[in-house]
Amino acid sequence: MKVFVLGEDKRSMNLRKIYNCSSTKFEDADVIFCPIPFSKDNIKINGENIKIDTLIDALRGKDKILISGVINDEIREKFEENNIKYYDIMQFEEFSVMNAIATSEGAIKKAIEMTDKTLNNSNILILGYGRIGKILAHNLSGFGAKIYCEARKEKDIALIKSMGYNEVDLSSLDYVLPDMDIIFNTIPHIMLDKDIIDILKEDVSIIDLASAPGGVDFEYCSKKDINVCWYLAIPSKDSPYSAAMYIKDTMDKILGEVN
Image (tube, rainbow, N blue to C red):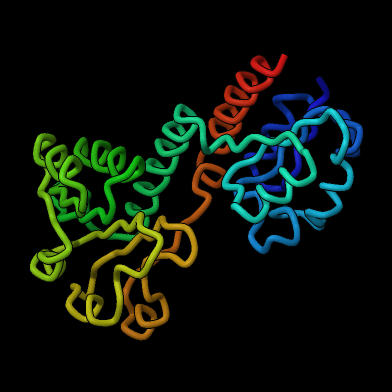
């Protein structure tokens, strides 16, 4: 099968090398990989000047496969209306976990760059205890950090306790936030608003890992001179080769099942 890789980020560039892509047009390929996320505006493919409708026209009625990640419902409907065979690799658990590992490592790297303190003995709060939150807490524990995790589900709170972390619910955030040295947010809606930001330490570092709209009032942080970073697409920035290999392994499984 001929594979064509769209995208100009380092992850896509590495994937092209791994697959030794020689085709110059996606129309000539059997499998087209598109960037993650697939699109940011529902008009063009992320990082490309190619319109989504142009891609759909090229795939309609043909035995071709499209693979990407974070394909929203509106785009899914278009694909299904036009009988386009597609796969969202973010729906594959193994890939999502490996992607979360790369995200966690990159987030820790960014935190080290942003602060003049050691992670060891620092008070670190993680907002959200999904895949990334769990792996982030595990990795940070190896640095000897004092870890606080916010969660809402009872099973997550039980797991946080069992791992020896400090559990935090929304009602108690105000009590722990003033003592935090570093805050990681993984929840894609505003968690750190003006009222919350006002009670933070002046030298706190905030790393927002959540997709749009993010979880931080960045404008207010800027006014308060708070050290904050909205850090997205971490695997393609900090570990592009590994990220490309995770994609290849998942694509190979998909194509193996198709064949």
